[in-house]
Image 1 (tube, rainbow, N blue to C red):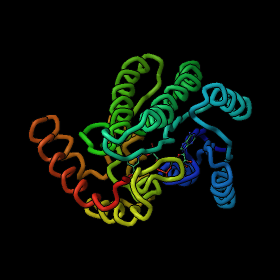
Image 2: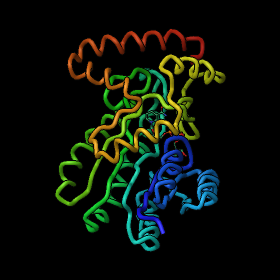
Image 3: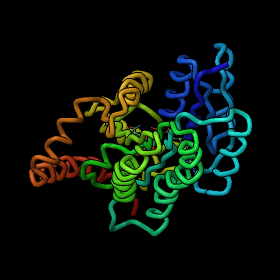
Image 4: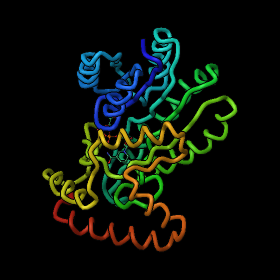
Length: 279
Ligand SMILES: NC(=O)c1ccc[n+]([C@@H]2O[C@H](COP(=O)([O-])OP(=O)(O)OC[C@H]3O[C@@H](n4cnc5c(N)ncnc54)[C@H](O)[C@@H]3O)[C@@H](O)[C@H]2O)c1
């Protein structure tokens, strides 16, 4: 029987799946909650083969009542949840001038409302337990200005603010809260993943990936190992890979220089992506 129980949204792919594998190796039962049930089941089966406990459940984090139900079912079976990874996320690219309302709302619904749904469902359980750790996946886009990802950056800034605010409230209940801010990690989301979109012409994925290579995306298993070390240390804001901390430091030390720098980076990306613009 496992020591702890971890509930991971977006557990079927990328960062969520990597956390699941690492936690399973640390005597933790993992629940992989995702819209992509088939993929989540494959990962859960591989984890069970290694002798650990893993379950896949279908969950669309946009649906608050489904979230409550899945959490109730989990508690009914396991009796507790020690970690909530509010990790499911999507991105929608493109300049704001070309944005439609769904380009905003689709991202808000998953990345922000989805996190709120997770907190509503699990935080009271952890308060009753008198223990637990909520890890909300934000992004470096939650700490820095990010061109052509306005809806994404808006939600990730909100997740950082939400996590810091909840952290000071949750302490008296014995509950820990961290905002996880990955830099670039080699997962499907770099080219939008299953439910996001680039808003560029077909074939742009190769170019986008070529641009990502400039910031050396980190292997996802290495990322999960490093991030878990900081989660165990209960850090309020977790930045991995650590070289991104220099950019966060610059943002706080001199927001104007930081804006200038990211404006330059954006200009380069914008020019490189010009041939792929939709008419
Ligand atoms: N990979 C990176 O470079 C990077 C950087 C910063 C932040 N992040 C964040 O990390 C988190 C995980 O992303 P990833 O890199 O593993 O990408 P990914 O695309 O591999 O995984 C995202 C997962 O979320 C699931 N998902 C999407 N919408 C959902 C919904 N409505 N309900 C339930 N599940 C849903 C997808 O099915 C997928 O399994 C996201 O919040 C992302 O914004 C990633």
